[in-house]
Length: 422
Ligand SMILES: [Zn+2]
Image (cartoon, rainbow, N blue to C red):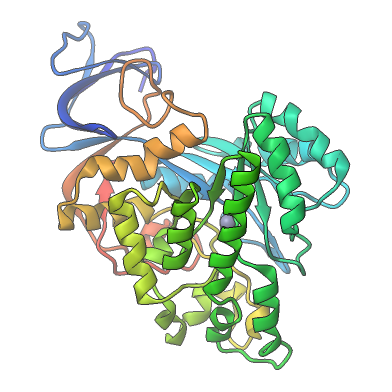
C-alpha cells in the first residue's frame, strides 16, 4: 500500500477502552487522520469495507523474550520470527527485556538489545533488566529514564543464574526509580522458599516435570508480593508484578496498590498438565498453578484486579527440552505470542464479555503504564494506525500451521481462536 494514499476503514465497529461504536477510520502515512461516525474521505481514497467487523487498537504485548541464549544455542524465536508471528496475531507492539551481560553497563545492554531488535516487523520497546546490584549501574538509571527507558525489571529469585537481588537491594533501586519517574517491574517468587523447597528434590535426577512446580510453591509468590507492597509503600515507586499467577498473590498485590500482569498460560492451564506426556514443555517459571488460581485470575480480568495480559513469550523446540532431563535442568519458558490475542478473543466472544475490557487488558493499559498512550492503545485522530480488523466469524482452532514453519513447540494446539483478518 502506498503510504501517502488515504485508506478508509468503512462501517466497522471500533472498540476502544471506553466503549464500542460504529466509526469510520481514515488513515494516511501510518497515522489515523480522522475517526468519526461519518466523514467524507478525499477523492482517491482506498476503501476497505469493514461491515460486520471489529476494529481494535493494535495489541501490545508488554512481556516478551525474543532470542534468549540457552545452553546449546538460542530459544526458538528471534526478533524477526517472533514479531512476524506476533503481527499475524494482531500484536503491533512488544516490550522486550534487555539482557545484562557480565561487565556490561545498563546503557550498553540497552544498545545491544536495540540492535538485535532492528530486524523486527513491529514496534519494539525495551524494559531494562537490573540483574546485578552495583553502584555504577544504579547511577545510570536517571539518564536512562530521561532517554525513555522508564521500566526496570528485577528478580527476587534465580540466584544460581546470577539474577537474584535481595529485598534490601530492590528497595534501594525502587527509591531511585521512583524519584526519577520510572517504574519497577518485579518477577516475584521468594528465593528462600524456593531454595528450601528445591532442596527436597534437587540433585536426585528426578525427571518428572511436576517437581518443577513442587519446588516453586505458590506461597513464594504471596511472600514476594507482600515485600513488594512494603517497598512500594515505603518508596512511592510504582511497582508492576509480571506474570502474576496465584489467587493469594493477586489479592495481596491489589490490596497494596501494585500493578498486575498475568499471562494466557496461567489462565488456560493448571499444574495437571505436568502429568501429560509433553508436560516438560510446560516447564515455565513461575510454574502453572491450581484450578482455584485460574478462577481467581479470570475473575481478576473482569473485575479490574488484573491490569494487563503479557505472554512471557519464550518458545522452545521439543529438542531443547529432551525427555529425561532432571527437572532443574529443563529450560524454562514457552511461546504464546502467536495465539494470545486469538484465544483470548474467542473466549471473550463466547462468554459475551464486554470487548472494551479486553482492549484495556491487551492494549490500552499497557500503553498507559509504559508511556505509549495515546500514540498507541487507542483508535483516534493523531494515533498510530496500529489497528486489528477482526471478523468474529473467522474462528478456527489453533493448529501447527499457525506456527508458520517455525520449529517451536506450541502448547495451545486445539484451542478455540478468532483470528485477525490479516
Ligand atoms: Zn519473562
